[in-house]
Length: 408
Image 1 (tube, rainbow, N blue to C red):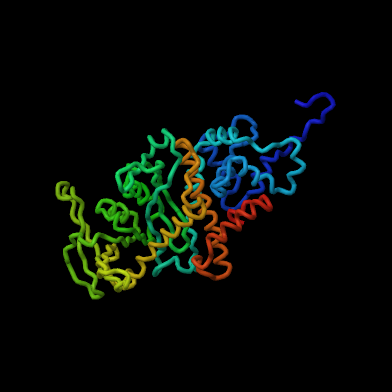
Image 2 (cartoon, rainbow, N blue to C red):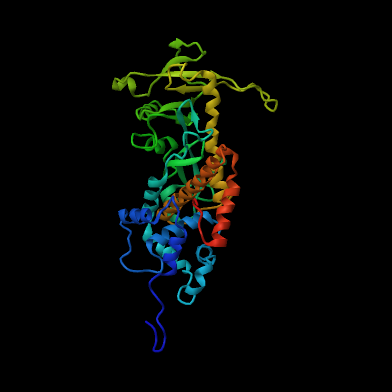
C-alpha cells in the first residue's frame, strides 16, 4: 500500500507478465503453458511476483544457462529488456529463496506435460538425412546425469560404483529417450533411478500410442535386444533394426538372396508359456580392418522385422544402422554443450531433478526445432548446421534483447 503522497504504481501490466510475452514462441505458446499448468493443478490462487507461467519460462532459462545462479538467470531474462527501465522502480529480481519456493510450487508435472505436447518428430518429407525408403528413422538409447549430492537424491536415484568398487562422487538419474536421427530431436523420454535398467525404461516408451507407429524404423544397440521388448515394439507397427550380440544363438531357417537369412528369437519364458518364437531377419557383416587394432573386428549382427530383402537390402541396412550414432551426438549436444561438461544438475530433491531434466529436454528440442527450420529454408541437411553456434545465438539473443529464441 502506498504511503500518503506516494503515487501507486500502475498494475495493468507487471514485468513478470511482460517477460512471459517477451519469450513467446511458436514452440511454447502461452496458452499451451497455461493449459499444462492447469492440467497439473498448479495454477496459482493469488497474484505473485512469479506466476506459474513465468516460473515455467524461468526453469527453461535455467536449463539454457545451466552454469548461472538463479538470480543471474532472472537478471538475464529481465535485465536485457530495453523497455524494462519503466518497471525498475516497482519490480525487483526475485531472490534465490523466492525462486526455489516458486519451483517447488510448480513441480515437475507441468514440464513433463509440456514435453509430451511439443516433442514431435520434426522432419518434413524434404528434410535431408531423415528418411530411408519412406521410413522415418528413429533411435532409442539411454544415458545418466549427475545430480546434486543430497540424501534425498541418493535415496531416490542411487549412486554408481567406480571400476574399483568405490562409490562415485554423485548420485545419477537414468534417462532413456527416442530421437529422430535426421534432426536429433528427442521426441519421447523417460527417467528413473539407476536400479531401473535402460530396457525397463524403454519398455514404457516403445508402446502403442507413443512415438512409434507405421512408417517408422527404429534403430537400437545390442543392449535392447530382448524378445519381449522386441515384440512390444513391433506391435506398434514400427519396423526395427537392432544389433544383437555376436555370440547370440540364431539358427538359420532360410538363406536369402542378399546373403541375409531368416532366424528366430525367443524369451526364456516362451516355452513354459506356450509362446511361439518370433521370426526375424539377420544381417551379418564385418567392418574393414582398423590399422590401430591388433585383431580383426568381430562380426556385427543386426536383427530386423523387414523380412523381405527387396524392401531393404542387407548392404543398405548395414549402412543405415550406423545412423544410430546420431543419438550419441544428440547426447553430446545435451550433456556437453547445453548442460556443460561435467556439470552436476543443481536440484536438491528428486522432484526438482525431474523438473530440471524435463527443462533440458525441452530446451534441446526447441533449439533443434530452430535448426531444422533453418536447414529447410536453405535446403540443407540439419547435420550441416552447428548446434554449438545455434546455442550461442539463442543465449546471446536472450542477453541482448530479452527475447528467448526457442525457436524464433
